[in-house]
Length: 235
Image (cartoon, rainbow, N blue to C red):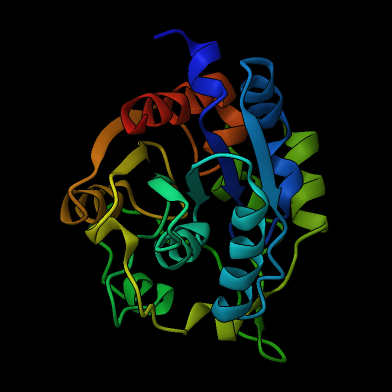
């Protein structure tokens, strides 16, 4: 079956993570759109998990076709819960958190790092929000992305609400929907070891790529192809 015929049957919904907004999906959106897919982008407020799930479910409802739901980083927690929506036929995780029921991003992040593993340079909470140290953001988030871009991303961070970080997941879509996980092997925000563990626990089809945490920016064509492969398998 060719890509064009598949594209008429599947929509792709992209869910960004913490500290950024949906503009990071621009190149992946362009690639998948050029291949004939309907592609929709969620703008998460990242204030509460409940609010982000609701925002995602509204976009899923707008999709014309069955949905392949894609989450990056914290967006993995969002799609884990929102992926329970009946229109969702597969869930894709990109360097993402994959919580189980009763877990939060905070509880997953609290797992002790192994020797040699980097940890995300997140500053202490202030007024109920988290931010990444702006000086360390470029190397930690996207060392293989242009410095001009990552410096701007550091300066334009979206504060991440503790209500999103600490909220526990009540539904885990990966228990009933096909799951796919792209591990960023050079990630300095979420340790690759932790990514592999979460992918394995979810029974996800897993691939690895030499990329920083910002895989959709550093390796957009490979990211788009991984998403398209999930769409092919779900059809």
